[in-house]
Amino acid sequence: MIVVKVGGGTSLNIDAVVADIVALRARGTDLLLVHGGAQTTNAVAEALGHPAQFVTSETGHTSRRTDRRTLEIFEMVYCGQLNKMWVEKLQVKGINAVGLSGLDGRIFEGTRKDTLRIRVDGRRMVMRDDWTGTVDKVNADLLKTLIGAGYFPVLTPPGSSTAGEAINVDGDRAAAMVAGAFNADALVILTDQVGLLKQFPDEATLISAIPKAQADRLMEFAEGRMKKKVMGAVEAIAEGVGKVIFADGRVDEPISRALAGAGTHIS
Amino acid sequence: MIVVKVGGGTSLNIDAVVADIVALRARGTDLLLVHGGAQTTNAVAEALGHPAQFVTSETGHTSRRTDRRTLEIFEMVYCGQLNKMWVEKLQVKGINAVGLSGLDGRIFEGTRKDTLRIRVDGRRMVMRDDWTGTVDKVNADLLKTLIGAGYFPVLTPPGSSTAGEAINVDGDRAAAMVAGAFNADALVILTDQVGLLKQFPDEATLISAIPKAQADRLMEFAEGRMKKKVMGAVEAIAEGVGKVIFADGRVDEPISRALAGAGTHIS
Image (cartoon, rainbow over all chains, first blue to last red; front, side, top):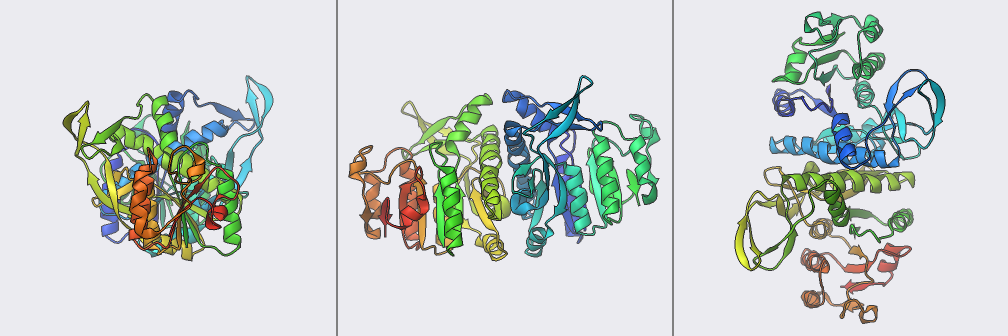
């Protein structure tokens, strides 16, 4: 089993990902797809007059302020616009895709953090009524039922709190947990970079391979949105996933190339 | 099996529908939910600067002009905002809901009509590049698999063309086809009226019961949005559904009341 995480970056070659999934499945590879949608959500939130806000926690992590209206817009984009786009593209190519959020059947279940300790202009503040959380477990039974019946699950945030509320969860961490739940051979994280770079944005400094035991060290090189992806990778390794690959999602055959050696391999 | 269709009307009592589903399931009733979202879609389309347009076919039927952007907004509202709202409300009440569109696993499969013959100001015109269609069959296997595994499916348009493309399909007809596929005991259609009225909007003229063989006659009384609902009812009867009930979705225990005799019973 290979778990593929595709970010929401607008420069990704979605049709190439779809074509590669079709080709890999034809060759007998079992796959599962998890997608994001952050960039599109920002654009739609802006258009609907509720622009995205980001907050920085006391520990220095940046996350989306998810009030109730933001959660609704998040669901419109991730579960409506983008999830059904992926499902349609796969269905047209003959793959019997079924799109689900982590809320459905509580596939991504975790803890809601309704109160966040944040810093604003250096001052400590408490932010309440937030709908953010962390995936603690993957309910793989539903996924196994679907796969066993011949369907191809296409997964996306949000997740479900233990109380059944929708929560904004990190898609990379969710994909890592899915890969862990399936003891996947590989988690392939497709982004708009050739892989992890020692000196961003110099592609000549691509880190092509690093042993699992040193995965933690990647945190020094990751910058911006890559930080959470590297955290997801470290978690996937901890969950027993065979290999994590960061690879370019802008090229033809992005998954096959990654499996053949392109990008950054943590193994 | 009871199939419940809830329209997208903003005056419906959604929490009462959810509470009633919980109560009925606790009493051992098998249920399936299909929901719409037309009114909310109109509001979001307006907010996003792509307001809804309606066209009248040569045969006099009114339908939504569904260009590619409209289809995308339709999916955002039906599959994102509203489907996940239903799933969350059910999950919070302990029902393991799984929200799916008719595109997922091609649950609602049918024929795309990419060319519509319409009338504009009395003139005949041909409208191309439309993403509308008709549900010809329900792929009940996926639903049976989910129900058998203990999940509660929450279904919504769009459907899938035979080529796997997303198509805007009528939710009432889709619900009728689902009820037919399950040989349901009843299809309960909840709207913002007490039932079908002989003289709209006079509630004293409620048609409380009519034999199946005369269901066609209801078309004379149906007006506006009710027309397609009555067509759905006639189709459900033709598909072998035991009973179709039009009932008030604004009240407490709307499904239980309908099953106990409220509304218009076609049986």
